[in-house]
Every structure is written in C-alpha cells, then in structure tokens.
Image 1 (spheres, helix red, strand yellow):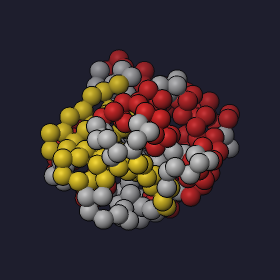
Image 2 (cartoon, rainbow, N blue to C red):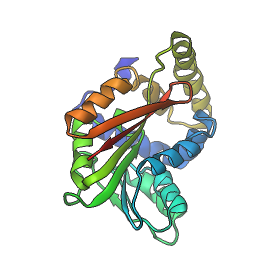
Image 3 (tube, one colour):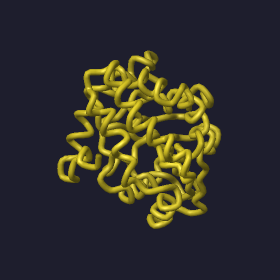
Length: 235
C-alpha cells in the first residue's frame, strides 16, 4: 500500500495532477466519504481560528474553497484569502463565489507569497498528508500569522482503539476505493488517499511537530470515532 505514495522529489507534481483530475467530483466525493460530516468539521475549523472582528484568515490548500466560504458565511465581517497549488480546484472555488469576495491565489503551501504577520489565523483541511515537509508547512503558516493568532489543522488520522482502527481500515482501504472507482475514472486518487494515512503522524506526534516550529499551547481533539483530528496552535 505504501508503494502508492510517490517519493518526495515527485510528490508535488503527482498530488497536483491527482487533484486536478478529481476537481469536478471532489465535493461529491467528500460528502460521500464523510457521510456529510465534513460540513460540521469546517464550522469547527472556522470557530477554532478565533478571528477578531474584521480579522484576516488564510485558508491553505483551499481546494474548492469550502472552508473559505464557510468562514464568510459564519463571519461576514472578516477577510479571507484562499491559496492552493492546483489551479483546477480553485476554478471550481471561484464558481461558488460569483461576487469575487475571496481572492484565490495559486501557490505552494511550503512557500506562501505573503509577508510575515499578514493574517490573524491560518487554517488547512486535509493538507498535511500531501506535503513533503509537514514541519515546513506549519512553519510557513506560523510565519504569516501575527503574534497571538492561531494555526488550525484538520486532518485524517488512524483511530487509537483497536476495534475502530480495524473498522476504519476496512472502510477506508477497501470500501472507499471501490465505491469511488464507480463514480470517478481517477481510481488512483482514492487508493492514494488511504495509503497516505499509513505513515502520517498520529495526533500526539503532529502536536509535537507544531510545537517544534514554535507554535504554543497546541491542543487537539479527535472527531468521528477518532478518524479525524483538529489541532490548534497559537503563534
């Protein structure tokens, strides 16, 4: 299964092509894979950012823009910028924001094109499994967030409880790829997805990585029977 994970030197190109190929069905796949719970998770992400009135939020790996749009729905007073390195995904995001309220910027999460301390918070949803350097990605988010602001990360994780870990494995490694293959011609995307969780740090390890780049008071909580984790760190 780990053979599905490309080596670091080609992973960015591989991931970009993968998400470009699944862009049109990405939202549908998310709804199906999470039983629609992804919407509630996005609300948790936005609230965890604890933005001040009129605050500025950076949504890293914005994809089709769902977190950025949810942020504006919950907080119409704030300013949101979405960044992603897959152009096809952001084109979908732009169709959801016909008024053009959200600037969508094409850029790499490891090299954010913003000055230090530009935002009040930075968030990401299901980004970190796809980068070649998790610490560097968190360090970039910390750099662009003002002192006292927050970095918030939503990610898939493997359950700690053996019974849930077994059920998670059956669902994510067998059911999801088969069902998604019926709905999408990009079967490799939904084989890569579960494979990417195998070596991904578990919540305590991800917390340590965040602390290692200087984020303070890092906390996390698990959701959906321990299959998703929400991490929050302060700058």
